[in-house]
Image 1 (cartoon, rainbow, N blue to C red):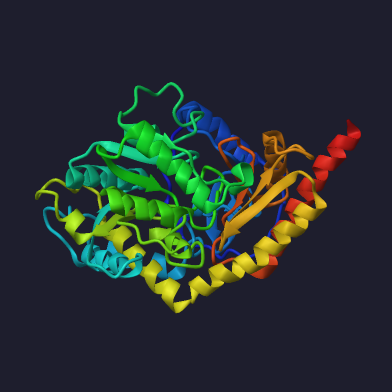
Image 2 (image 1 turned 60 degrees about the horizontal axis):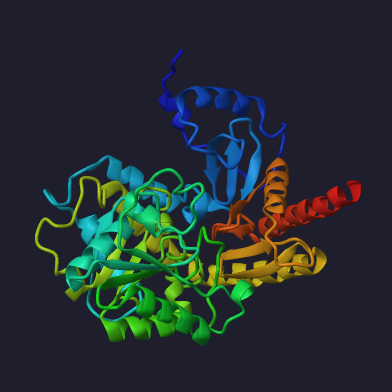
Length: 457
């Protein structure tokens, strides 16, 4: 029998910032919900964890059974400033009483304009910029490609190996990994070219040599004359938090600028203070022609942006950009609150602090557990790559075991990587050192369980 959510059920509840497991995971209420889910939701919409969330705050997620989990995934980098941040909730709630929707291309409103101003001020580069607001990261990527094609009069799109850019037809073509994102969903949009990237752990190349390899591919196998843009992630997300070698991205920017190719930074996962800078591009000394924002921009509400050089963005004819829900006023004011919180709470320095806590501890785990082949990352965007000990062969089975163990013991971890052998650490900037260290102790136990399994074999 169907049942509507009662307003009383939506009242906010206090969430203590502690890990607490009081039932089996999943608990009985989660199991009951899962049975309902199987009857109503397509199987193609998977879930990494067997729990159903009831509420969350800060760095803690509470399931319907009352279990409390330390969240090291932040909704895949969305709740960067913490779940249900008070300022974000207050701003969105106030806006709900005023205007919930007014299509900006019909009856515009100030929060859209103010957010565009803030993105222009905070993205790299001191040139004049303009911003288009849309609903999702994939939509931002689509619009960036559309604008680059229009501006250059070219059609080709270059992306890098191991990239992830979305699930729409064009962005599936731009995404590297076939399963589960692309298999069976073609044919895909054409004129998308995948070039080799910089992956220091696996290719061992300097930034200069890796850039030369990428450029040679684009010049010899693609051709520059019909290439509109190069879309890249400064730190690859789903691809495994791959941090390029020093000098790689500056060399690509120099080549793009010299050849009239629009240099587009997909900062959907790495932007908005995640890495201890407003945008990860800043760590590499690059200034993209366009910067794409989403995920952490609105504290959990759906919103994305395309911010680019004014002369590029203004090329498009009136009516050529837009969409019904793009820059929704509730999402827009939530994003304004996110900007204010990053400033007032000093979250850039906290992002750097999390790196100073997280990376050394992960390297300690690497010294202790041979299964960790590589530790990498910047700010609150770090990862370990798991391998068969003594080799660099990917160890996806170990990742599955560790993430499952962690869930059973109250820690939410995310896997990643083209070879499914990476665990990414994406804590919110609201996490305390104590919670972070406690979560890492669970990861240590999970890794130790791998050795116990080996002994039992």
